[in-house]
Image (cartoon, rainbow, N blue to C red; front, side):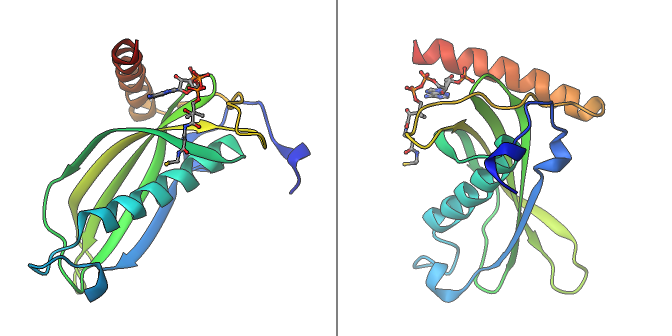
Length: 161
Ligand SMILES: CC(C)(COP(=O)(O)OP(=O)(O)OC[C@H]1O[C@@H](n2cnc3c(N)ncnc32)[C@H](O)[C@@H]1OP(=O)(O)O)[C@@H](O)C(=O)NCCC(=O)NCCS
């Protein structure tokens, strides 16, 4: 698919939904056997970047990480599942939520470990911000996420000013 196939039409969140699975290896750990936070942050940035890039259909750079909370420890041997979804698309930026869960090896039940909200900006070949397709909320949950993201954006931009 070439650059001419990019769309300016609104895109549903499912089109950019991203799931990544990792395993926490000894080289990812800190001195007490839990994951080194920077490793998880790098995975989150990769997952968020793929999600944003899928929505924008071009490279999107990380502009801000507003909220990143480690809720529970991840240990060596754990299977780690990251999910990225676009909450809202603005003019040249998108808000992406990335969640990180541990998957139990036997039951495959998942437990939430980390949640992050990030802003990515779509850029052209020269690194200049460029317009993104609108997001098309498909259900009540999508609409709620969109509304909340809009509120956060207003607060974020007020803080930047
Ligand atoms: C992100 C970047 C492209 C924004 O460039 P800029 O000249 O500030 O662009 P603008 O002021 O025109 O803003 C462009 C968009 O970025 C958003 N933005 C800029 N700074 C932001 C911030 N601190 N938080 C959230 N959004 C921000 C603006 O709201 C705007 O979005 P909109 O068009 O949807 O309203 C630029 O700062 C950059 O290249 N930063 C480095 C990115 C990078 O290298 N990331 C990799 C991680 S090290």
